[in-house]
Length: 233
Ligand code: ARG
Image 1: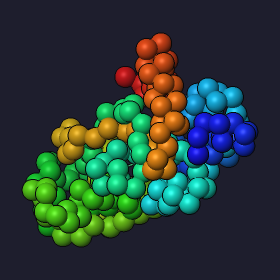
Image 2: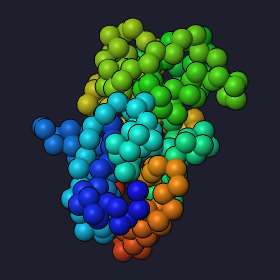
Image 3: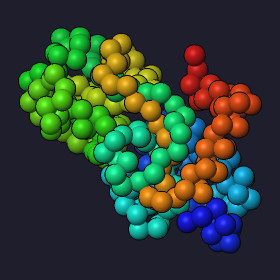
């Protein structure tokens, strides 16, 4: 859709997966977080209402392709793979994959994942990293367990059913915060990734508008303000 199509519809349809604090998560019935605030800015720029739908992470790209969503703001890494299927805005956040283990774990670095059972969120870059299909990464885990929610992976880690969880660094911090007496995040960064807003392929005009909003938010300091509201230094 073009910005004009969205203005005519009166609503910007944003799809996300609200299992990813601080970027998107549920506060009661409401979906809140950094990506929601950015999306609201895009809706404001267009002069339309924002409608957020919370769906499974591995269905977000399909939602764009089928026209159910105009944009996806989901802490989504702008990977080369995904660029074949969607257009991305300029990046708005730097991230990496991190390892969560129990406090008494013998896993202290990436290569200790070899031969272990690792939990990931289905369809994420953490999933791809651990699955290591093209043998790009110097690890070879015994089994990758895929969960629809990062929190479920952490529950299995706490229950001793898996040895580690691999998930994005800031969400990892938030997950650990809630159980810091039992689990910790290792300092090692496994990857270097950039989050961007995804749009259907060929969204040239919308992409331009989204990039403008992001640039304005960066220049005015608003982006930093929003981020620090959710991520305490
Ligand atoms: N950055 C990772 C990826 O793009 C994980 C994103 C998960 N986001 C979410 N809202 N659950 O694959």
